[in-house]
Length: 247
Image (tube, rainbow, N blue to C red):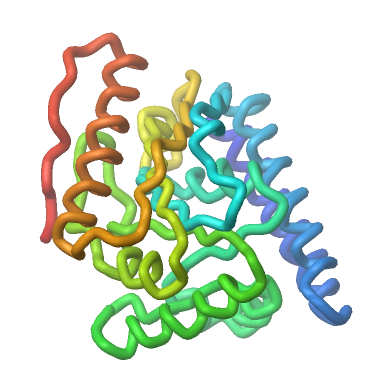
């Protein structure tokens, strides 16, 4: 019943706020759309708690520098974006270009200042990532990116992509790794939701200057180890390393 109620509220909020946001794209500037998306993500986190029984606990705020940063996050489910976006007033985010096939969504993403890149990767995708990220960095906005580029079930991970390293060095922005165990309660795009306390934890920043391979290994190890620790903490099971499922 919880999962059904949350699904109803999820789609009601999504449709309602999306329509409101599309109307606000007619106004100049980013502020009107940004305002409505802030409310949307915060209402969704409330709905997670009230209807799905998933309470959000945020840890590690002391690790977030005062300057704009790049948040590199573990990606367990569609709920990840709501959880982290709801914590900030303005956040640029990286998303795949599959959403641009919907004309209205494309307009909305543009107005929000989203960083839309080709899902297939390659040189052109890296160029687009650099160019669009530069706009966010110039505006003094922090950037949200999922370095694996895919949703993953709890306990698994994919190859960490190098785009976040290029962004860090191009804009001289620290990278804040973000661990989570949300997938225990809302896994990938699954219908079923499980009540519990989901943790979103900001970890110690990684400063620019590392070589690419060292940086990616450090980022992966911090995120995966802490995410697995959070999973172990929530389930009471012994700690087990996460498993590479795709390269």
